[in-house]
Image 1 (cartoon, chains in turn red, orange):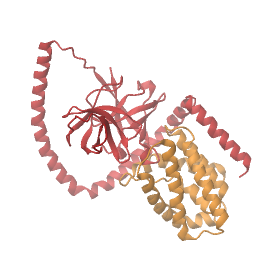
Image 2 (cartoon, chains in turn cyan, red):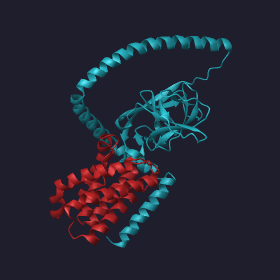
Image 3 (cartoon, chains in turn purple, red):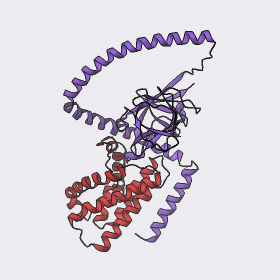
Image 4 (cartoon, helix red, strand yellow):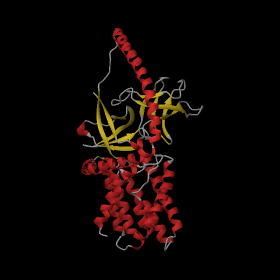
Length: 261
Length: 153
């Protein structure tokens, strides 16, 4: 390989980097995604069917046990749900009587398929097949099975890129459900953490973590996961807890984008 | 083999990487298949083809990635250029037992480089290369004759 080839490579990389910074690469990326979408979706579906086929045989016994356990849990949850609905009704009556103004925006969900994932698992992003033309905006939240999965980072015409909540650059304001402690969620070396929790907050292991509507596109009250324990040292000025989500981010196939209306 | 066949295989490898191999994980460990052919060519002293594969797969991965353009290409090229230099400088014929070590070091360099440029740190940066080296070694033993003896490649 001659030195001229290296110069050409460096020029291509430098121009590509500058073009990407100013958004000139977006139409090219959009065109590439559009032309390869069918192939990528085909590969994803075939892989999932293949993996599911083999998983079925290996997990028949555990599936039967889990099915029985879930049936019992479903009965208990049904009863709890009925009580919660009653409490919600009473809450609404009380709010109306006290003259509270409800700021409950209706939420619209956009279903999106994952068409590409990063080549390395620790990069924590996914690409969806919905973009500007479908009403997706930067900062929109992405959920799966009512759990928060990520935030829209970049939007092309027909595709968008999502930073998963396991990414250290994805910052989400959250509240811990029982202790009402507030903090900032982001990815860390060994999972997810909530930082900047005031020292006087009494964090309880196992309590739910929910989103707070401190930014324009963030919907309040979306479940993120559960607290697994405190990871901060006693000398630190804020508390830090580790969070666990039941979502398997490696196995995601489709998600929903929340549009607050 | 003509250049367009190489490019077609590059496309297939990149598609497999961002779909199939991203889905098949073991405790969050991914297999970086896209770098493997370039490493194979470098280990067999086919420097031009190694750099072509590194550049092409890198460009395609950069297009499919929300990270800054050039990160994957730069990481691929640096890994392959350094590997090619060491192999051509110190070995006329690489012993099989060293293949695994070179694979691990190449992947470790690549993953560390990507982690630094993307500011995404994880213990997986050190675990992935072990898994990749083992898979790469298996791939090497299966395709030894194809890469070594086939002038057409």
